Image 1: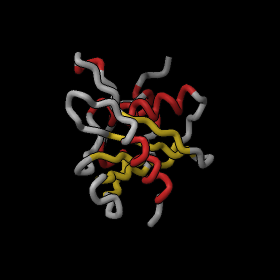
Image 2: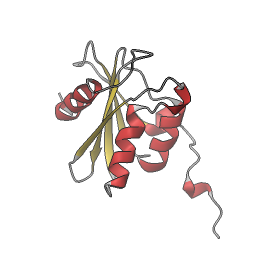
Image 3: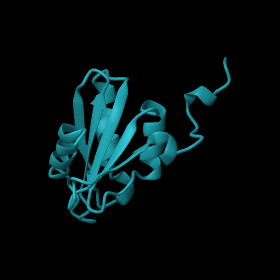
Length: 132
């Protein structure tokens, strides 16, 4: 199966999730163009608005480590859920050409493969700003 290592990284990240309220564990693994994998897991707060999704944590870690070119992201959760709107926006801005692999943690051998363009068509990005 293609992307086995990336899917395994997302599943492993999911195990690090801190989701005491929703119990909905999510792991994400972002593949850079140079072949590095950066992972993240969701972290919840009792004040839900302060929680952060696995996809954003992986993306923020990657960006703050100097990575800017991403090819693929694998996201693992029960049911293989797609990213929320906030994650779609940030991924569209920083990984807009990325392939997206949605992994059902109960059935990881049959992922759904899509793209950021399908998940967020006509995304608003920095390219939409008028030139100064």
